[in-house]
Amino acid sequence: MNKKTWRDIVKKKGKEKITVLTAYDFPTAKALAETELDSILVGDSGGMNVLGYDSTLPVTMEDMEMFTRAVARARPPQLIVADMPFMSYEISVERALENAARLVRCGAEAVKIEGGKEVTEVVSALVRAGIPVMGHVGLTPQRVLRIGGYRTMGSEVDQLVEDAKALERAGAFSVVVENSYAEAARAVTESLSVPTICIGAGPHCDGQVLVIHDILGMSDVRPYFARMYRNLREEIRAAVQEYVRDVKSGSFPSSENYKERKPHLNAKENATKVT
Image (cartoon, rainbow, N blue to C red; front, side, top):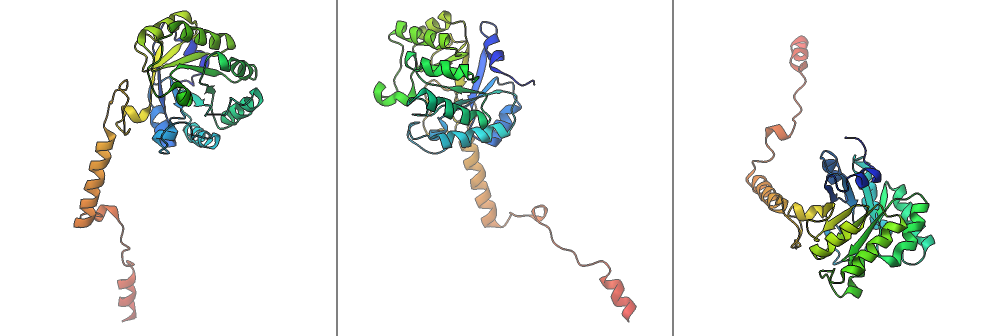
């Protein structure tokens, strides 16, 4: 598979659905690299799914750099998009440029920023600096305190559309629409010339993104909008229990799992010569 860029994502609008999954580590990225997936999102959701945080708010730039480096080392053909974490771009445009550059140096090929009209100055500055930007409207988890919880967005369709169009004008190459009513997501999709990528916003977007832990059954709480394709938690639990039984019973390790040093073949010959 040829290496994908942000341009390849844009070209799919209206022609082919875009597929995106999160990854935060090397082995997961290696596995995704062998699929037909279009893009890997190094999400700040790794704070919850890998580091055990209750939200994405505690995630730091150092956390995101660690996740991004691990994914980039797998050299996946998919476009690598890294989340800008909470307070990494809100303080100033200069701070946003510095932090985005840090992620690019770690291997990110684009960054994602949450927010609408209020972040367009940052988006424009990043694009001018040569860093592709993916926008993010609807439910924005980094603003969960102001929103008042993880709730479905899009009641004010005009506002959602206005925010998305402002991101497009600022230079965003795509826009994530999260946890919003399907009708609102459709309105956003039809209003933009760049692709929309839904998570919990229905079938009318140009693509879909999910958290890898949700589709593999590794999440403590699976969102209503996610589909579990495998239950790896059950597989891991069963494998560990089987391992424990084998060790305690003595059936592991067996002969194929260890080596014994054999006596030197010439020892008997040398003894014969001496006598």
